[in-house]
Image 1 (cartoon, rainbow, N blue to C red):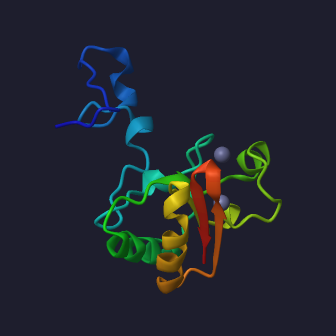
Image 2: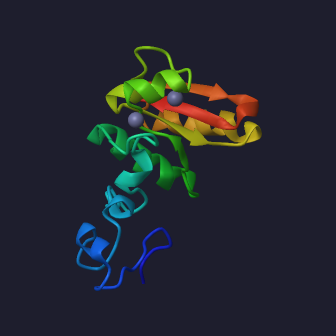
Length: 139
Ligand SMILES: [Zn+2]
Ligand SMILES: [Zn+2]
């Protein structure tokens, strides 16, 4: 089964050449690579340009955190290019630009527990964003 974001293109369509052998739009399959049991590269990409930088140690710690938490770890912001980082009001030397930080969805009442778990998984810095519903973790 093709995933929802992919589309099949008939062989007669002249735009077919722009698509891969399965007829999928290369943009929609870009970075659609499973890295660990729970994470795909796509989840870390910059939303504006689809580029991505990701430190293996960040991924390892996130997979560890996912298993310790026992429920999905949803990344709301992963890698950010310089442009996107300034658009979202990130600090100029944000670890997001280096591929060393992600923001993860977490309801306010779960954030303290999340901090404890993230600390035990070896994250160097954890910032709780209470009512905004996410936590920043970095290596
Ligand atoms: Zn970007
Ligand atoms: Zn962040």
